[in-house]
Image (cartoon, rainbow, N blue to C red):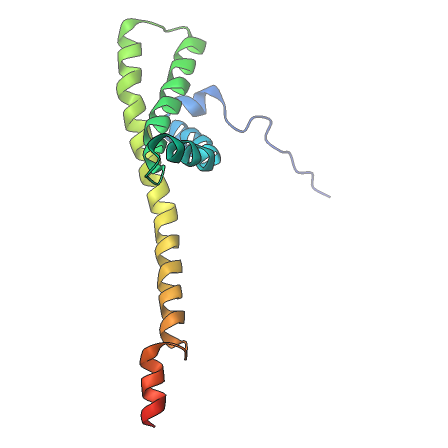
Amino acid sequence: MDTITLPQAFLTLQDISSMGGMVIAVYVIVSFLKDGLKKLGRKISKNGTGDWIVRPFSVLVALTIIIWTIVIKGVVNAENIGLAVINAFLVALVAGAAHDYVVAPAKEKALIQTMLRESTDDSTPMNQDKTMKS
């Protein structure tokens, strides 16, 4: 019987230091905390959906991870800190776009399915008119 060896490290510093690894880390962390963030955003704005807080938080998460990798690698200097700020916005933007690419089509599909169900339901006024004429 063959044995299966599980990976010993899911994400390494080298993985997280790449653009793809950084996007995955930010996407996962923000997705995990998003519901709580939206509740906080609703409390702060009092009349909004709370979605506004997710983007700045994504930038903050990305910046924290980038700074963490810079410190761990021991390459802390003004140039790398400046680039970290710019790269944090880029990573947050790509992570948000990945979320929209993954989640938005599923939400749109669910909306279309709901609309189709409602349009075929016999209780809609249009269908009641058709049954009265027959």
